[in-house]
Image 1: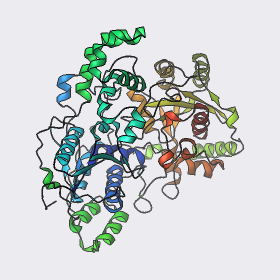
Image 2: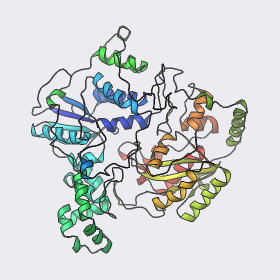
Image 3: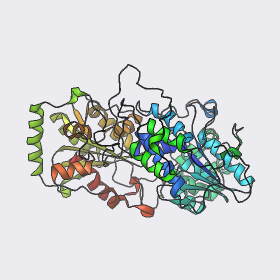
Image 4: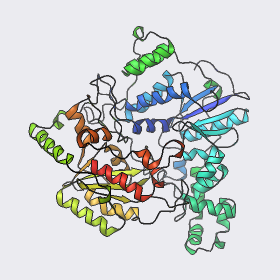
Length: 559
């Protein structure tokens, strides 16, 4: 952005959670590669579409006068000096996402939007600092994110903006979801901890209990000082024993809003995209459809604009050659292509032989005769039943498997349940993390009738890691990433979406719903019919187990 003017009263600062946008784009959409060389670009295109939509169609009540996208720069920050194990459990980004981080920052600048990052600080700290500066200048700040870690920043003049629901998240929404006001979110997180970021918290205390304790004692330090007054023995003992751990957790979850930022907020003044710069970037990535749309909006002649140079890093992956195409977690979405025939290439070694194709055709004919009876599905709520299903899968040497979670971001998603199918019509759902009534959206009280998650994973791990048992999934990459975070390395695998790519190329869709209707004459249960849509939508851990079972078990059965 070439223009610059300091924030004034009445200005509107928009701060995009760039890292959150990246993972949402990567996991929400099917894969896409650049046709000329196989470079993964699906997350880049998804990011560009989301940014374009924000710039053109935002309905948050006003247009931004200042705008920037904020990114994480390094994996190590000052929090690792406080607690070396901070974020220690996070897996490395997928190989096909790594080259897209740099491209997305280049895309941001191509839109004439600053891409801001800084060593030793997380993007959230930069967002906190710029939000504070906006309020002090008399401006308002909208943080384009739905990340609960940013909810501590909400106050008069500062709100989150959830682009998926096209609505603002303010103090009332935080109170509804956390059970506390935004100024108490830090204390709640200090007690409850965060398994994703490896924030320890206090054992045995979740978000709901933390909110109740804070309602009674006021704040974290008062609670810790008066912990001996708590009646519940185990809770009292844990608060006393792990008091210092809670204090360390508070230092970890508290965002630093006084970062010595390297970029002045005045430089974020909104300026329109330059046609040559933006279209040149889009042409370099071979986004032909998007290029036409942008050219029309900017009244530019795309044909006269040459592609601009882009910097590509981390590609091809170490070890040489191109990686096999990845599959995102949007398991029911069809493959996107930039023109017919641009579906991701798959290794020719995977191409089925005529014998295998004939076998697949016979299997399909058989499957068409098998009706879907949800009443025959089973909810597995005890170890004995789970061991029975495991024995069946081990005996036959294959199973279909699927995970249900709370997020499209596999790095943050909570594992809610696992579904398996061992034969047509023989499917089950293993609920692990469904919340009970009254637990709140981020509540920690589990519903009854579930196996302890750690125990269930210990039982499942030998099966899922058994080299002699084939695990079949639809867009299984996401499930692998979720299970890897829990210490389960699933192998060997097969993927119905990739098989569809091989057999039917780019002429048809390859999402699960399309495959089911095309090959099984069956329309699966829609996710929105289970979890709601729009403002009434809930995360999967809030879906009642009986309803979740029918949806999840059917997914495995269809697969």
